[in-house]
Image (cartoon, rainbow, N blue to C red; front, top):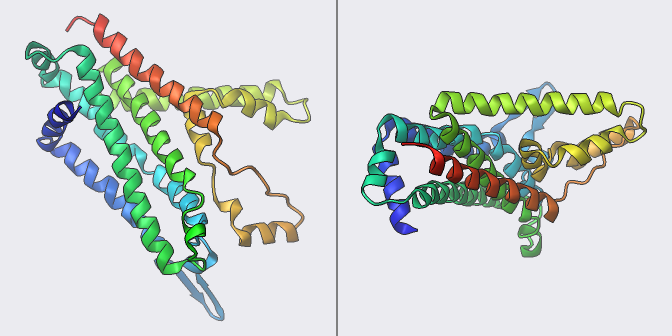
Length: 281
C-alpha cells in the first residue's frame, strides 16, 4: 500500500495544476472559519453569525461537514486530472511495463482517494474543534464528542464521490470530459427525480415515495448522508413555529445510507478495474 501511495504522490508532487487545486481546496475548507467574522450592524440591530449557535457543539460537526462537502469539486478535479494525465503522459503504459499490474494501478488510485478523504476529514475535525472551543456555549466533553458520525459520513461521501470521478476519468480519459460526464449524470438524476414527482403527484406522500426510490441513485445517496443543517438551528425552528411552519425532519446519519454509498463505491472501483483490464493500452 505504501509503495503504491508513494508512486501516486510522486506524480502529484510534480503536477503543478494538482498542487494548486489541492491548495485551493484546503484554503476553502479553512475559510469556513471566516463565517465567524460575519457581522451586520444596522442601527440598533446587531447580528453576529457566530452567536447564532452555528459553532455550538455538537451542531458544529453537522454544519461544518455539510459546508466542507460543498468544496469537494476542487479535489475531484485533482482526482480526474490525475487519471487523465496517466493517458496524456503515457505513465499508465510505462507503469504497466515497469511491472505494476492493472489491479495495483487501480488500487493506487483508490488508496489516494482514501488518503485525500481522510486528510480532508481530519482537517474539518481540527477546524471545527478550534471554532467550537472558541464560540460554543457547551464545552462538556460528552457534548463535544457527540454527533461525530457526521464526520464519518463526510469521509464516506468523499470516498464515494471521488471514486465516481475516478471511474469517469478512466472511462473518458480526459479530465474536462470526466467532470462534464459527472454533471450530465447529475442532470439525469435531477430529471428523473422530477419525473417521479410527476408520476406520483396524486399520492399524499409524494415526497416520501420519491425519496424511497431516489436514495438508491449514486449522487442522491451521497447527498443523503449529510442533510442540510440550517433548518436544524434553534433560531430557525423558533421562527418557523411562530409562523405555523413545521421544519422538523430526520437529520440523522443512518447505517443503510452509508451502506448504499459504500456499495456504489465498490461498483465504481470494480468497474474501473474491469474497464482498464479490457482496454487495449
